[in-house]
Image 1: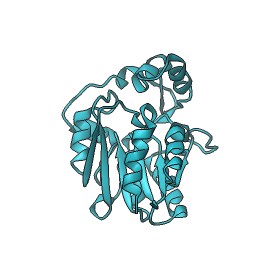
Image 2: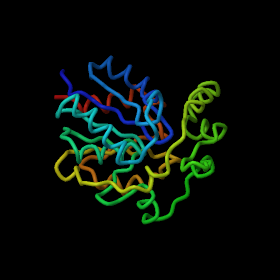
Image 3: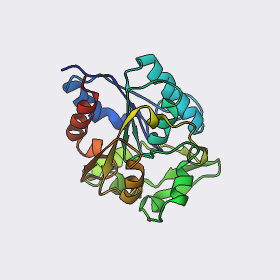
Image 4: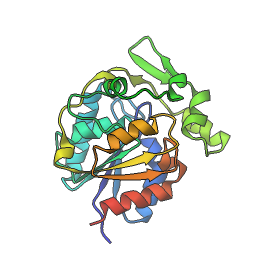
Length: 235
């Protein structure tokens, strides 16, 4: 079976490093995959920017792969892929516990308008003096990676980097889901993006897949996540 190529877009405070295990499994299934560091994250030499800049980076990467690419976004990365797909042609949008925003909506704007549900992520966010936030590594390890060993949690928590506030307050431009098929992967045990908030955004997509997983299902079980993506990407 052949597959369309997949482009993976990470979420806030993260980097392309988060996809390593998933990409190994996608390769095993014969699915060509690509990932990028959004500006200022991971190994990117660029300065941190905003949602518009992140979407442009994702759109450029997608365009370089081709119009048949499956664009996958995790968490904040959902806002990024929505903005990117409004700028270039993609074949499918996949939101993993992600912000599937509508035109003119921002991450913070959605959260303010949606029914209030508190999540534990709020306890781990530390405001900076330069327009960014960071994460408390002692709290974020158990929160993001509860099924991993303590040493694995510590190693991953140490890799998280600052996130610009502007990315959360800037609105998405465009409504690509009106013309591009979309799938939402809803994580029922998520303590970062509340499952009830995910349900609201999942209803905006063509297909919903529910998993009994935490916020990083593709780290918790890369085999399961790779199987889902491979089915979506199959020709």
